Length: 150
Image (cartoon, rainbow, N blue to C red; front, side, top):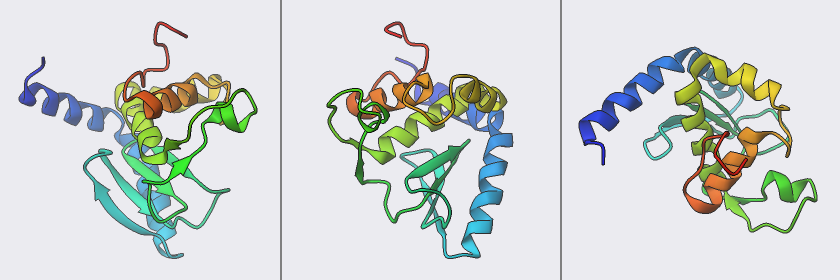
C-alpha cells in the first residue's frame, strides 16, 4: 500500500498536470458566479465545485479539478449513460461519484483528456470515459477508461 506521502505527491502532480483544464473550469465557474453560481472546495472530490451553474441541460461537467454543476448538491442520484440510452436496466448512481471518476481521469491524462474524450465519442453512452465513470460510481473502483474488461 502506498504511503500517505506518496499519495499526496501523486495528487499534487496530477493537479499540476491537469492545471490547463482546471483553468478552463475556473474561468467558466467564475463567469457562472456572475449569474448565480456559488463555489466550494470538495476535498472528497479533489475539486472546486460550482453549484447552480446557470448553463447546460442539467447535471455536471468536469474540467480538471473543477466541477460545474447545475444543481445544488452533487450528492444526488442520477441514471447511468447506458440506462439513459436504453441499453439496460441499471441502478441509479451518485453524481458525485461519477464526477470524481472524471477528476481522476483528468489527473492522470492531463491535457490529453479532452482530445481523448472527444475521440472516444464525446458525451454519449458509447464513450469509454463515461462508461468507466458510471462503473466507478456503481462499484467504487474501475475509473480508468481502458480497464481490462473493456
